[in-house]
Image 1 (cartoon, helix red, strand yellow):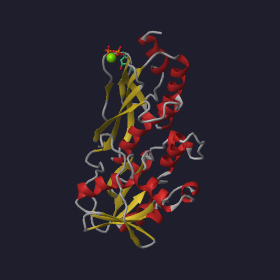
Image 2: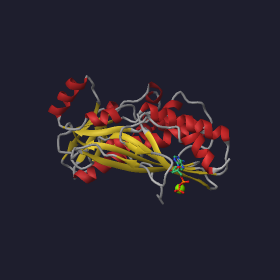
Image 3: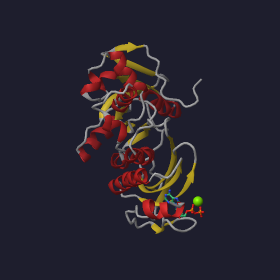
Amino acid sequence: MSEFSIIEHYFKTITSSHLSTVYGIGDDCAISDIPAQQQLVSCVDTLVAGRHFPMDTSAHAIAWRSVAVNLSDLAAMGAKPYAILLALSLPHVDESWLAEFSRGLSDICQQYHLDLIGGDTTQSPTLTISVTALGFVPRGNFITRRGAMVDDLICVSGHIGDASLALADVLQNKSSPLQMALDYPQPQTGLGQNLIHFASSMIDISDGLAQDLGHILAQSHVGARIDIENIPCSSYLQQLPLTQRIKHQLTGGDDYQLCFTIRPDLYQQFCQQYHLTPAIIGKITAEPNLQIYYQDQLQQINTKGYQHFAT
Ligand code: ADP
Ligand code: MG
């Protein structure tokens, strides 16, 4: 099967017919309109087989995940997702794999109303998927890692640590009740957009809560206190010994939930307006470090999350 028939068969059909797409797959570049009074938000993330997902992950889940990690980055800026580009390097052409991969892409593009507007298809020894995601944000209203203020509340959008525990199970060849959390992260794009005018800073949790919150603290020049018992997780994770639970919740990655800071009065207003109550896990302090408490006892914990080039 040629590169061109692969594109024709498996990628050209994936579109949500977004109004911004003037020209999609089929020419040298795609052409898009940026809606009036909006700004373009863009990011790219690469997934390498065996490094970012176990080798035996289904093609459907790989496709879902490679888009989801990017949508999560868009969500963390408050952006509304618009489209993706896909650079795919395949060791060989396996049509049943490609069909499953294409179905996974199509499913996430439909769920989040995305167009696949272009990409590149090449051969390489290791399966590598690089997705570029584009989104829009009302001009000037994006949310960064920089705005956290002393006494802001620190919130998370959902369970933290479940995906990390699922990965630990998978690596021990155990079936995991949390497999879905690992394979099908649900980027919080709706919440991210709703937090515009409410959150003072935001990040998505991909490399572990402690490390990712640490980026907010560093860029905002503040510190934080968090209370472990307030970090939401599944009952399966809750049953683990405390040290294990802490490890998965603070340093495990792959959750793709949002962590944001918000002034207490705006939190109340947000909850009333959207009928939501995001979990409050701590607050921003003037003292510039991260303090972790369990039942009001300060804990001494190594909070390094995932790092690619750690020595
Ligand atoms: P070029 O040689 O100009 O780079 P290609 O032959 O690589 O063009 O691609 C032809 C068209 O197919 C382009 O519109 C490109 O964006 C699209 N395309 C190629 N590979 C993919 C892919 N994996 N997913 C989506 N679109 C793709
Ligand atoms: Mg090309």
